[in-house]
Length: 446
Image (cartoon, rainbow, N blue to C red; front, side, top):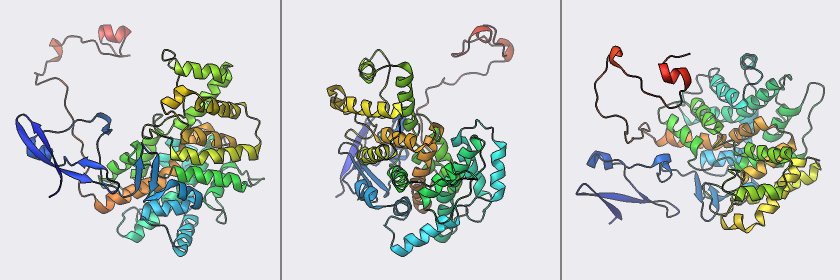
C-alpha cells in the first residue's frame, strides 16, 4: 500500500499521498487538498513547495551535488561543449555524433538576424540596459517566423529551439555594440558557438578579434555551468508563462526579465561592484573581511555562499581552475583581480566563514573570468541569460509536453473585510505610507 501522510484541520483528518522522486526526495502531494477540505497551504516564496515534477536537473544542496539529466556536472564540464550540454538538457540524452553535427549545423544556420531586426537597435537609447534589449528582441525575433512559434510538431520545436539558442548570442552581442556606438558585427559560420560570440563582441570592421582557445574554453565552461539549475526564479517564471500556452520565445523572454533582478542574475556583477568598492575606498582586504563579520556594518561578502548549497557549490570547484588558468594566461595587471584572489584566500582561511560554510560560489569566479576576458559589467547578466537558455527551453518543452492546466497559485487574503463604498464628499484623508509633504497633508498630487 502506498505511503501516505495525514493532516488534521478543524477537527477533520485528510489523507495525503506521498510522492518519492528518483533520488528519494519525499514530497506530500496536496494537489487535491483544497478541493477536499477548502484549505490551502501557505509557503511565502515557495521555499518548501514543489511546483512541478521535472526530469531535467537534480540538486542536493546539502551534499553539493548538481546533475544534468542524471550526469554529474563535473563530467559534463570536463567533456561537453555548450551545444552538447544544451541538447542533453532539452532532449534528455547525450547526442550521437550525427545528432550533434546536425544540431551544430542548425545553430550556425540560424545565427543571423533578419535585417529588419537590426533596425530595432536604432530605437533604443544608448544607455539602455542590455537585458531590456535582450528580452524585447527575443520577442521581436519571433515575429519574423510566425510559423515556427506554433509548435505543431517535434520538428517545429527543434527549429524554434535552435533559432532561439543561436540568435540569443547574436542579439546580445549586437546590444553591446549598439550601446558603445560601434558597428554591429555579423556572425561567422565557421566559428563555434562561443568563439562566434566573442567575435561579434570584440571585432571591429578593420580588425577581427582572434579569440585565444583557452579564453573560448573558459567562456564555454561558464555557459555550461549556468545551463540549468532546477526551479530557480527565472526557470519557474518560464514554466509559469509556458503553462498559459505562451510560445517558446515569449516564455523565455519572461525568463530574461526575471533573471534581470539583482537578487537573481545580478550576483556575478555584484562581485565586481564589491571589488570596485574595496579598491576605490582604499580599504585593505583584511579590514573588509572584518567589516563583513561585524553585523552592525551591513557590509556583505558577495559571491560567497548559496541559498541552495549548504556545502561547496560544485560549479565553483570547477570554474576556479578555469579562473586561475585565464588569469595566468592573460597576465592582466588589474588591481581588482588581485583583490579577488586576496579576498578568496582570506575568506577560505577564516574560521568564521568556514563555520558558516560561506565558500566562493560560481558567481565569484565567473565574474572574475568575464572581467579578465573584457566583457563589461553591464553584460554579465546577459551572459547568464545566454547560458541559462537551454534550461529554459528544456523546462518549456517539459510543460508543453505534459502540462494541461494553467499554473494558478492561491493566496491568503489579509486586506480589509467587507465594507461599504464611501462617496467622495464623505471621505477622510488617510495617510499613505511612502507619501510625504503636501501629498500626505492635503492629498494633492504633483
